[in-house]
Length: 285
Ligand SMILES: [Zn+2]
Image 1 (spheres, rainbow, N blue to C red):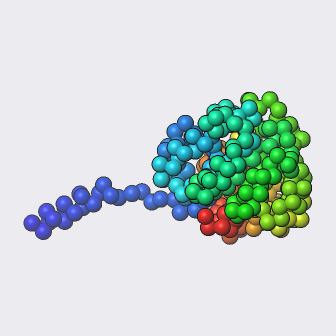
Image 2: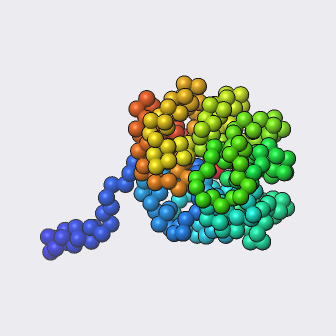
Image 3: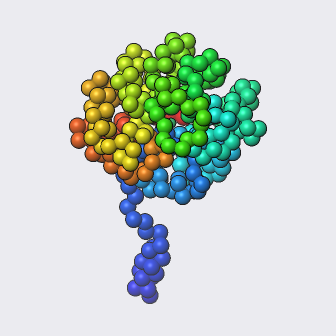
């Protein structure tokens, strides 16, 4: 009888046995929607992501509120070229607007449904991040202490935004808006990519500005040797506390591998990059 009980416990115990989960802890600060939100979330979770900042069309983004796999921070994409999200070309908002109405934005912020403003798509729209058309949104972000994430650098092929302007991707264009909104929490998405030296200059002048390393850390887009060079420049400039991990929907394992491959970084510096800096920036949201 006793033997039978032991066997039963053993057998019943088996289905609850899980293979050891990854010990990684990652906050992905740059995520967009996918056709299959649940499997996207599960893939990220499997890789060690526990929290992510997502921005997408408002409709698609709302479908993530049901997935409950990861802790998600929700963004607000704007301005939308011809009312559409670049690449996927879904309408950003139900009525096809390029700019979401301000009073609606404020209501959604008050309901706790917007955690940050971004991805700011000014470059795809063909305007500067310091264009005054954006100022009322920055004003709201500052008033509610919401971070603002601004796309910089270049773009991939087939974005479908007819007014895209390459020279609107330089982080130097942030200077007027940073001067106008000194309290705003701003992050430079993609670390400026080819304009990374300009990003370093802006971050040295403005201690509140952070950057995410999406795209530059993706070996399918940027060679590992170049990513290493860019990261060495940031670290040498003393910015290790303000760089944040991001995939921009790139292959999570490859992006993690690229960061792990930076052998000049200590384990503590990698931890800052994977999640500690982002936790600091998003203020425990
Ligand atoms: Zn971007």
